[in-house]
Length: 114
Image (cartoon, rainbow, N blue to C red):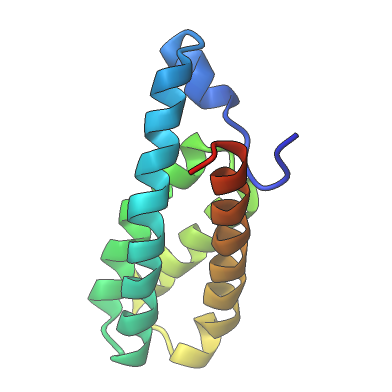
């Protein structure tokens, strides 16, 4: 049983298509870690726009994979990027999201033999 993700939405929209679910998982593994790097770099560079766009890009995927805690974090990061906040205000949220995504990546790779 998955601890960090839930594919019920994926199966609901695909009428239980296992291959579609695998494609969504593969997409997650390719795109989300890369966008997390963009968030990290944007934060280091104080580039709020970069942080906002990276967070905005992964938001639907986190929702689709039922990653509710990560979704809440990405909403906060997206809002911070849009509002030009101070780095210290969002640093812990980014760290939390990064850890959650890292654990999800490991779990998905194991569950799907990728």
